[in-house]
Picture 1 (tube, rainbow, N blue to C red):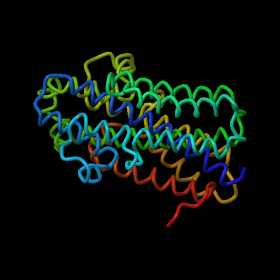
Picture 2 (picture 1 turned 180 degrees about the vertical axis):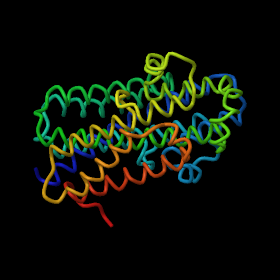
Picture 3 (picture 1 turned 120 degrees about the vertical axis):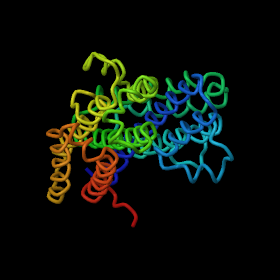
Length: 323
């Protein structure tokens, strides 16, 4: 496959997954903001969302306060913010259009229709009338895009690059979400929180831990797997080490490695080795060891390794990134 074609497919999938992840975080933050809470607590929640995407500084240059309306406008339809949903859906559609011949009719029509309908909904005021329903629509369109891709495309290199893009983006988002949310909730005192002081605060933080799980569609899964009250160390274990949790780091890296094996070439051995090493660390890791050494340090290192993996994939298969 031509590197340019692979590049468009890879980024089409990444941008679609990023739009869904942004909608998930906005939806949960919006629902949480409706609960009784102080103005400072609400602002901290919205600032945390900006921090996940590393957009705090850029946001502050354009908006005076981090309230619900400002942050949602910035993350949904601000065309200056390249991580906004409007920019992600446009980029996904443009990448799909560039490789129209490598996609099935159903995949292309799904991407194109998503973009056209998104703009109609913004123009009609659907976002302002019911943000929750709007975010659900974005998630649904991402699910539809993924389902149509798997259900109609030939299982060749094109599909493998789409899958690599999807799960690399998902791993990055899950790690960022965990890092920022855990740090915000425990105030940086990880050792104390997971120790004797944990039991005193878990009751208070129930809704916040629930929100983290709901943002990755993990609330029902948590109940099924652990069958007890929501405990932060179990949330971390579910979203990092459980290979049967679809949005966990372990599940994402399993998919990345499997699809990389299918497109391997003469120059990709080092990238494949690093991906396999990262998967092995997750496969044989223990949550007590991760927490003992520091969750923040672990997730920061994971994000660095995922970013390095993305650079390697770009170098070996795609259009080289600009220096």
